Image (cartoon, rainbow, N blue to C red; front, side, top):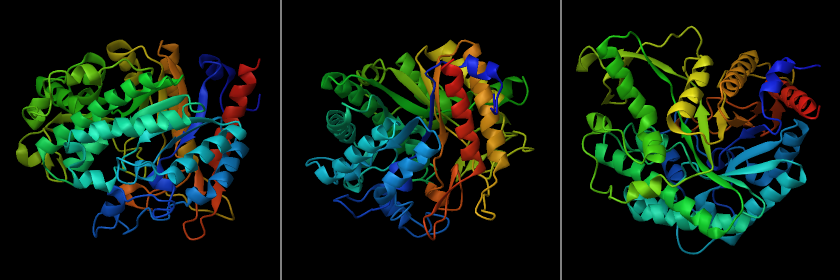
Length: 463
């Protein structure tokens, strides 16, 4: 069998394993002022001087809004079976509430129909960081009303697409929405060092998730709903009490902050050690809504960390001006272009931990991938480092499945190079190269390799 893996690898996977890729609306769609779309917080943020490294924005991005049919044909040519995309809230409801923009919803209708015609199963993300600017001006995620507006938005999407889309996630990476957007200031809306805003926005995002789950159940749509979290395994540098404490605080900061309320109905007590008391916006019944039963958990996985205690405040690791009570000492022999250390076995560790400590739900790796400095040579892009990264992480997934974890799918991030948020167009995660001058798409070696993996998996599944 001509395959990048041996048969034992494929035999470890469920026969209906999801082989796919993923994108998000603001990063690829472009058409920022087309079809009745309203501005989002990322339109405003990216047009603000000093917020994006190359002074770029998502006005055009990959122009997927106009090129979606050709992009889906390329997905089909690469044997992709599943596609995770997100909907632009401000394309569906330009002000975030009130009247629905039918032209915006029609775009997603066409997208879903085109995917199904190509034999590709759609997987929809309701929110990937692009809050309508009108809602931000009313307080954004710090305003409790935003959670209810999100549930209304979700209901509109369920009723329009739920006859064809059978898997939804409410939010992508609420950690990034709250921490990067309200404490570190690296993402929209760009608030910095505001502990109350960080806690409140995180809580309201989680609350909106629970309200959207309720809306999904009430809609009568047949399908599954969950949430996607970015998770980061954290290890102590030594077994000293100080390093163990530092690792625990980092784990609360990166993982338990969101896992605990979703699956245990409570926030971890150490959260107060990092940010102070929970804000008054946390009401007694909220956690019952946040912890509503869901059908699946999405895991976005890129890296890991090893930490030691911070010797003193002056030596503590800094994130912007945030002083964190640990120092990172993860090895740097193998890092991506983002500077993120690579250790695929840590993905196995995280998946086993989820299964043992949090949930037996089906898990999907909704994002995994790496940025490298890719450049075309004679019309080809040779990205051996990305192939090695993905291969190692797929083997880590198979090992977790053999350990009893119910992993149902893998979505490579990303389908194509795109607008990488505060990094602009300077970082390339795609398995398809995007020429930003011409918007031509060139499948990289990793795309051809991944297609071979999928074909081999299909052959094994079919006996």
